[in-house]
Length: 243
Picture 1 (cartoon, rainbow, N blue to C red):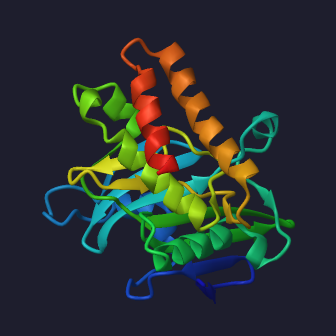
Picture 2: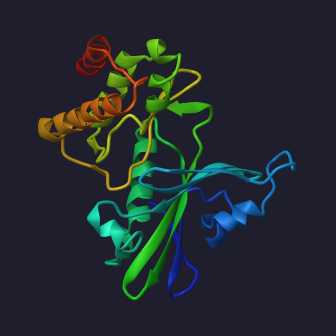
């Protein structure tokens, strides 16, 4: 369970990794822009990206991290991009995701190491960020499928890993080809556990997870000419999943 540090009536920092000198500034991109990289030649902030929120990539003297700002999706995001109704700390997005990540790490599931989170309350709403450790030398499945390495993807092993999550009751609300990563040792990782949870075992939600992953593959295939997953590859995934 994260350690909560209330810095003011409106700002709370959540610590999962208590060995780091974590404070509120760690959740600001401007802080990392001013920090040196380990080689002292560059800045610690090395890039940005977009997923289910705004993302910053950090390589610092304290370690390598991914900083994510929680964002809303769907129609509501057109007039409210990042504010959520505050109904208690344990209902905040960073508290729930950090707690789940800690649980999964205890279960020895391949997920990023949680570092911490922050939420700020204003007028009964809150905004929040999450900090996790970078998975070293890893690429997401989407990029690998589009690359020359596509024929070497261990689909059966991916299926086995997803089954491990399901056997432990881990429901991923957005299982797709961007949230599965493979490092240079061919270790499979799963990332981005916003709005995910640990559930009672049930074939219905497990199958819906698999269906969601297949839809994401089909969707990307229709959008990108270089993106293609053969029926044989998908069957290898299912064989790994079913054992």
